[in-house]
Image 1 (cartoon, helix red, strand yellow):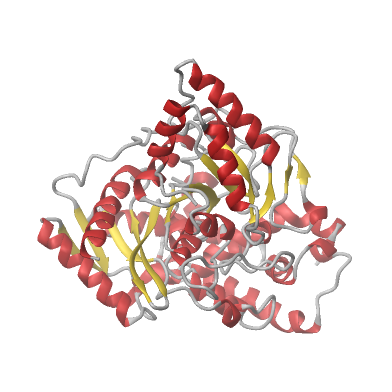
Image 2 (image 1 turned 120 degrees about the vertical axis):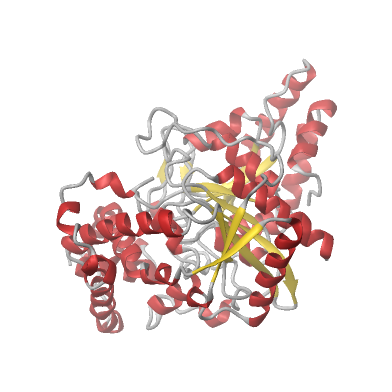
Length: 53
Length: 454
């Protein structure tokens, strides 16, 4: 949490932040398209700019 | 207030050699617009107008924007001037070089009147700004101005300028355009160079115009587009013609089925049906498509956006945390709880999603028409929640129709199609990479059709 160095989160922010972040991460990691894609391991080696136009 | 189009202004300034006079009129009109203009740069505008009049006196034109008064979101560098980012005054920076987009508008003849308010660091779809408040909604008083190009939408909506630049990473051109009843054109990611533009999320950031009409948005986009030899992402593709040529024969247009339209109002549904019927009557082929999956990419788009934005802001957040407002700080803080592998997976998901969209949508139709917002813009007081509970849900609902387009990197144009007692209704015309010209062709046809029916 060094990104927030010098200014602590408020109790209200602390209460919602981890939950929101976890929901977003879960939404990525458990996305059905990634689960169903057999070529995902190969994507790891692909040019990281390959997802851009 | 100016009712003259960009073309009419440029022609008048050239033949009348009166850019200076027109600039004085424009400066007088914006003098009291303290919620829209963050800084009026009158001396620079006057000097520029005088130089243009001198040029015109020799029979020469600077370009298609000769003497046209404009103003832009406060995130584009101009050498010797402070770029404010819509942030706390301590966060601004003195620019050493002029951004490519402003340099191109200058070369085309614009008179830049000054800086427009924006959401803090271009983060926030409502237009609320922790430090500066919210620009007035010019189409429905009390409603949000939309963000993050809030001042751009309001300036064009109020008729203070015919066009203004904005940026769009999740809907930030199209949402304020929709809220203020004007046109917003988000180009393909990589169409417009980002040199000298404040970064937010480098894989989804785009710069484009908000304008009074589709033709003017196209013209301004054609001026700023194309590689500059500096931004490595900007692609060397066929340029956008500055003028439209009408809807091409054989155009196929897609409309979403109910799966992607869960919260759309009845009057928006009716408007989509009206547009589709008009197209059919015109001989434009239409098709219903299942794009329900487009609603499933919100988390991935957010993981990418917040991770990249946190990388941009990490040093400043650590050094001067007090300059950040609650909502921006709360959103950036989310990145601290997102592991690196989630960012990589989100980028991988983007590849798969783009491939699917190109095959299953733009393999069947040339363009897609979807809403910009589910209905009219909400009232500002109802969505002023700062960094509190419900922020993710609020943002998610506002960007439901815009964020997937940034995730794919596709171009899209938002235009108003109806005026209600609660403000304007707007739709987007979306296309595959580099389809801006045909998007503008269809949008201009929609614009004229709607206008004729009103």
